[in-house]
Image (tube, helix red, strand yellow):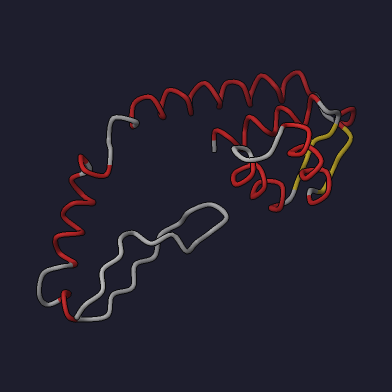
Length: 126
């Protein structure tokens, strides 16, 4: 979410307000690997674009900046919680390798922006 918000601010700097899902996926997945100019080009290509002049960009920018500050605070608070220290994750992993789940097929659904196919852990019975 932080990357999406930051790239949204960049798009306003570039003179457009983006809409649609495609831009959010590129913002999330591409912001670490694409140069800023390439990121903006990719966003322009897949996003619904609206001229920034049609918006109260000063207010929009303030609101997004406020959200970014909150997201950074949340990130700072949760960053010490690594998978090894995440009690719920460790309990789930222990349950998955214990009977009756150990020898059965298990499906675990999780939401991960843009993917939907990130494995929680690789466990192969037998």
